[in-house]
Length: 398
Image (cartoon, rainbow, N blue to C red; front, side):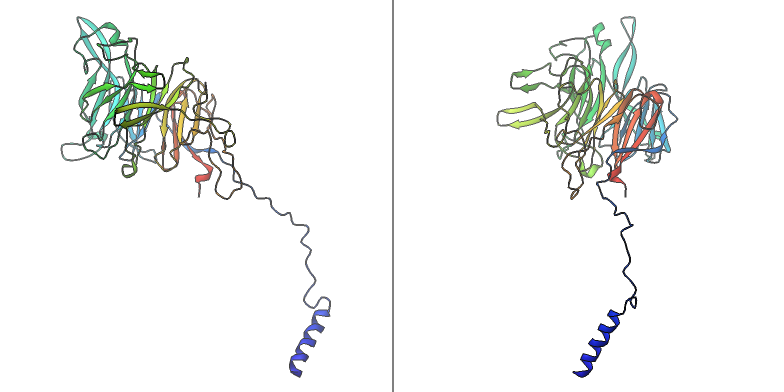
């Protein structure tokens, strides 16, 4: 006990000796950092993919390669993720391309023919196999196996107005049923309001997996059934996006309208089956000013929405290209413009990350014409600058 008290007294004596353990350091000169949420924005990945003259479209294939359309050379060019060319093929008048889940390419171009002594260039959908005779795969072994030529997929007669019809884009559908898997929609525009009782030229048309025409789509709204619902449709995207194993099934899709008289130029069309039959119905997304200032179904939100895509990951983000505004717009799956703040950030409002503007800077475009999203990378076809620009959100960097 005496030893214990002696130790305590000795310790107290040492503590009382100023400077024995050193004087307390003054830390008041150090600025305490202020922490905030990381800035959320899309930033360019350099260099952009070049070597094109006038690219108009690209898609991410279910083989996880990039397919770019160069309108000037009438070629489809395949690239890997690093931008290295894997092959190319020439398709007459090619404008757009998509790949189905069988790994065939569906390319929209033109077919030159003569009818009653008059030369015409007709809208044509090309099916392209990529399997060579020895089982090799890729564009170096690609060959055309089928042509869907307007208007001969649904009628035998021809009128001069048929030569003015053009196909826009293709959207592939996924299904657990082999019969319904790989059906696809095609957007179509033209001058006629009625074609052999098959509805107007302006339409979204459904084909089966064997390129057999099924029908144009009619849409049911609260005002009734409309066979002419689609006005100047162009951009088209389904929920079946790469990779293969997560491609969503179903017949829903989004489309864009280039008709300036349409207040809602980007819409989601839902396919609903009931005991009374099946309907296509528009889904209108309301805004939420507590979260975002803008949303996809805001009236007159766009000027010339020429293309769109959907992220194949669990975000299901939507990206819309407005060619007139030289811009790309990003929306959530529920239609709100912007990206939600990170968890535990303390923030609630979405950050708007849409960007663009006319020019040749890394964040600018001249007449952008298409967009794709793959593995957190956003690809934009910058047609006027002859390049494929790449971007990544700051939240997606390690």
